[in-house]
Length: 192
Image 1: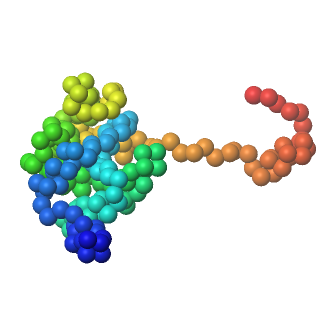
Image 2: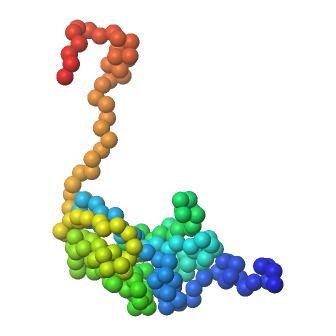
Image 3: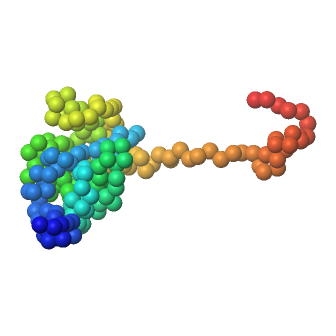
């Protein structure tokens, strides 16, 4: 049987999944909770990895049909696999809620994601939970931390109140720069 006679779902021209239970099974195996620790918050992403791009494109369509905003399916060069990431907070929450009741292995991780994003635990408690899963062998990865002792919403409010460091602009004028380059200057050179 040639590839042209395969059903369209195998060719990747339609959604790969028809329901949350099947997608949750896939997430249990090849999905992951990714996170980065910032000054006030933990940034959480849900991701899928696969060596066959059409599979992830089908997952992306399934999620977008349910108003979950996804990133593009992109190549992870160092691993020779494809990667699909969901990072918008509302979409992470919606995806986690859709998966959690059907997952087995990653249910505790998804529950921790929802607890943190729904302000039930602090960033610090979230990272402690994820680290405990690593220590228990339920999750691969490195021990991370420390994280802020704030809930997600409080951390976001604090982050918005604090000015972000900006790239420092040179205080030298164009004339000053030209003088430095040519060695021309008025008066003595002062070193600070």
